[in-house]
Length: 113
Ligand SMILES: [Zn+2]
Ligand SMILES: [Zn+2]
Image 1 (spheres, rainbow, N blue to C red):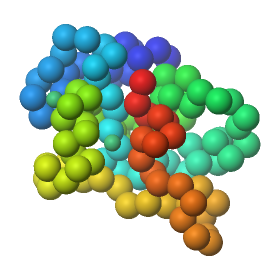
Image 2: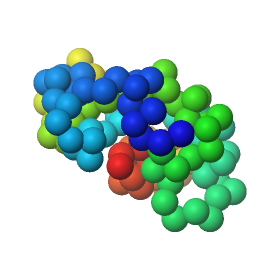
Image 3: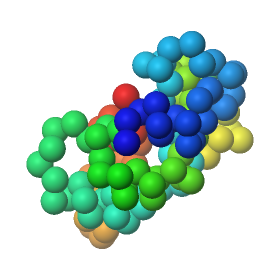
């Protein structure tokens, strides 16, 4: 499933400001932690690019009700805490237990393209 298709399912404009001019300017932001399936898949994956649109379709479908569409600017603001009404999932280790080695969020460009 490509990004356009995902955007049709999730929302084609920024949830905060309504921006919809440029596909590249739109990100997916997780309001719930990613599904277990995604973590499992990532652990076994050697793929460098793991943006949402490159994931297997069943994993994409699992994420759809966990993400919202935000433009790049609003996305940055949400992560800087300017929009307390939009949840940012807490950090979590992909391995389940042990120290947190990775944040849920977009440092890995997992859901932002
Ligand atoms: Zn916006
Ligand atoms: Zn985000």
